[in-house]
Image 1 (spheres, rainbow over the protein chains, first blue to last red):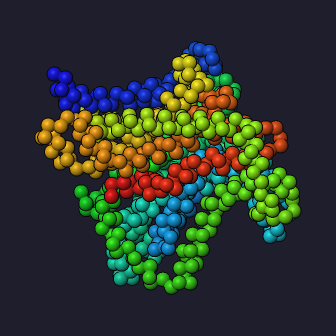
Image 2 (tube, chains in turn brown, yellow; image 1 turned 90 degrees about the horizontal axis):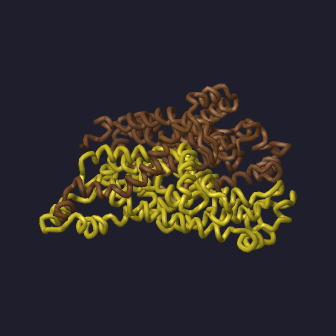
Image 3 (cartoon, helix red, strand yellow; image 1 turned 30 degrees about the vertical axis):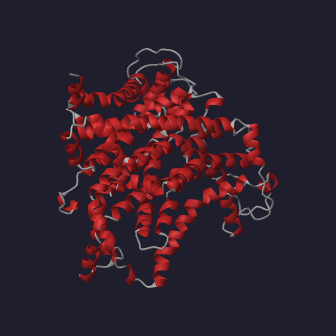
Length: 299
Length: 306
């Protein structure tokens, strides 16, 4: 009887799924629902709130700071993702060449992605220091600028500086993932194209790009997803300042909910990110659907 | 955080790559050497320089005496009189050693718990194929896409209600929410590559499912387990937002949160100590990484199956 239970796929499957299911239901699914619910209440930290309908959302839509954070988030995500894609693809193409010390380069390139973001952000904070920035020092010595750049003190400088730090951290991931994709493309395709007289640019446009599309779609979806919800980089570099110019929706919801104490409002702000994330996931889902020719007739 | 998924998609086309490895030279030999320098080596070296410079800067600042740090003259790229004062301050005058211990403890426990749960889950989804396994697999993938920054507020409420606020348990129990989906997804891909026939043979010989898992699947999946394990360890070591929200006492903070919230005091920043803290906090993951680079890259790109 017992052995039967342990060899039945359904009962054993249930048993094997149990630890995962319990942990994920309690600490993932339930909080997700609770977050949406909290968004409809006026809960404060340490107290229980009551249902107030769409009041949080109505307030946030009219709140100029929330509007600014939405703009910042979109700006940050779009610019950082475009740069990460362009630089990541370039780096992947470079690494795909026949290089000496290939594995060394591959290993070194991933470092920014491995190290805790909060800690590498501190290094950027020091690099961006208004008084002692080494970037300003070099530019001054070269005679390009005469006053030290206030990287994090001016709204637009701060926006661009945080994007730069984000790109620095994200490029390795994009590059290494795309490199894996590039390595699956058969060199014989390029040889055939070269014999037919295709230029390197044409080879890139008509062989590399189409064959890489499915992986690009997936990698960029992830990149967009995690850039859109980025928190630690901003928290460490600017805490949302100067003049809230770098507040993202995630940092603003943290500020409203934890130091500010309005869990309900913070949760509503976090919930407002979900539609954007869903859009990204749908994109990923359709990007995943490989067309027959992209699988090389295999399967 | 975003690797397991690419992992599995990349592998689907992995077959083609293998057959090409023997003939990788491609047409690179057609390019002349000067041209290669301009189009390949110089841009690559620039990339490597930019990607590594912040680490160099972190290291050099950590060993610089304060006088040199704040002097406007001299070459900032070099140290005249290296010092260990910042490290000494960090280790003896701040709770840094405790943060280190917390991070090690929380990361290790969370990693092993998640790995154990993921092995069972991945085996059940991939091999037991219980009714609804496919949907559960999809659910696991979707769970992986939920970013911590939309979960931390309700989780904070739950952690508070369970009385776990400001304890290590808060972190040990919440880290698996992003570790388990990731590890399960990676291991599912790995298990898929182990031939069914092995299990069938064992079943015919009278092995139970448990024996099959322990004696056949797990030994074959060791590289996958290492990949998942080191990834999980790195992810928990680097975690920030949960540790920032669920813990407030200094003695149970983790390294990233401790350095960011406690070493920055007032208007005068102790850059030397800050960078020393960042360097020491990055070192363990960098060391783990350097030992397992191949597992990392393959875990990331899904080449585990090769």
